Image 1 (tube, each protein chain N blue to C red):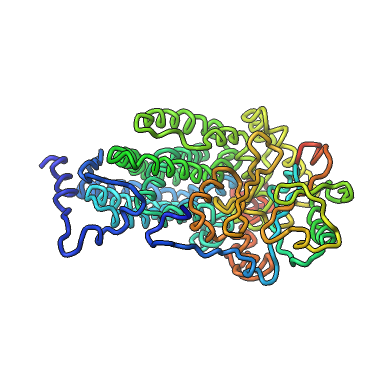
Image 2: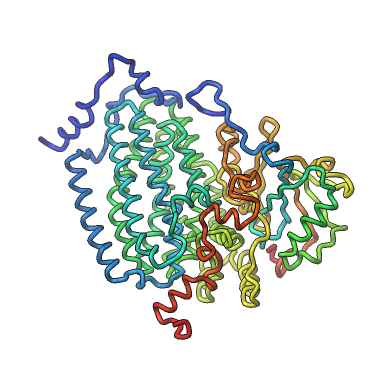
Length: 497
Length: 120
């Protein structure tokens, strides 16, 4: 039997129209979003993956991965990274991204259950298994670092509670509580197709540049799955657009929404690229230009024949590329006493690199506060923010973003809905709220939850305890146990030995 | 449409109603063009707190973390309430000053601003 025939048997022959119950009763969730599908057979999976091929490919990749992880552990590979500061990128990945892989596993299982086309169901179910595998490989890979560095323990607990992790968590929960078509547009198209390079390229190339072979390995192992997911994302959107002209405005609204939500989520990645990698790959600005403005621009030019246009507010994202990573690092520096990663003022050669990468903006707008913090720290007064931040109701990031065109002014947007005030960091987040306010009035905003008394108690130590954040996992890198240990292990500093 | 949902007339629970804050209300406070503080603050405050007490007991200690915090001339400072200029009544309460639950209060002090005049 040819692969094509096998695939047809798997995806079409195993499907049937129900008779004891109506199809609408069995698949109650694939119509309420307004997407009209006339013919599910129009769904084409370009990979035509069958179960036997799938298991064979995946098990082969697993064998390779775990062999390399074993070797990494036996050879103390964690000592080969450029600097212990790098390990903070992995902390961010394990607490922020790996739980999203698990959430994607759940989300695709639900989408697979709720789409009535057999081809779509099979594609979603395979992706669901892929995502579970990704979560698992990441946990196993990163576990070695947990033996030597602080901040990795209790990552699932932290994902549910820690203030900045509500950003990735709420992003995915927004997608999972939408209907199956919006979920798949959000994750498969907007994230996996349009933005994923901006997540995986920095982390995986960053790992390679910084001597972290373990992370490179899970990156490679996931790569062929990711290319399948990306292709699926594009096919899904084309399929919906081809089925009925009524689908276009709905899909455009989702593209606008999920571009902006994904972009705000990538704020964490921008900071990681420009500040957390001791050996830089490229700047956030360059990455945005290459992977969104050029590649994304070409994609949307291609989709123009379906009537799809560039996501709303992409111009604001382009304007913000000069500031995004600096804003993000400032947030974490301000609140480092309550974060499970360390921060620091970059070293002189790194400041020079930032000046060169951001010649028009860095020295004027961002270097002054870094210099101030540097002086304070030298004087033994490590600076921290004395309060709690105001958060955006939608993306849940502290309101640190700037008014378009005015980098010295915080951007405020405000909406009154049914007598209550709601606040946003940007036009993009504000529009998403205005489209579905009943969804976002329910947002679990970490700062508000603390003041409602739902986070362990009224004092900071009580809240940190409720987070399971140990004091040694937080604070400046210069004063951390991670640094002292690293210097002892690598003999960088004979006095510490 | 207020939401796309399976259930007709779906309503979300408003999680941050003022009743949930044990007698306090939230006021958001930002000092314009001072980016050393990465974002505005969220302050839980008694609604009947006089405005002058907000300045003396809450804002003054908070802004002491900024190198220019101690030298603010409160008599020449100007204010925005929900984005609009307003002149607070120092003796009156927050609520009487129109500062209700989840209102943004912004402080503006004369330029040049921030560390080295940089807006930081």
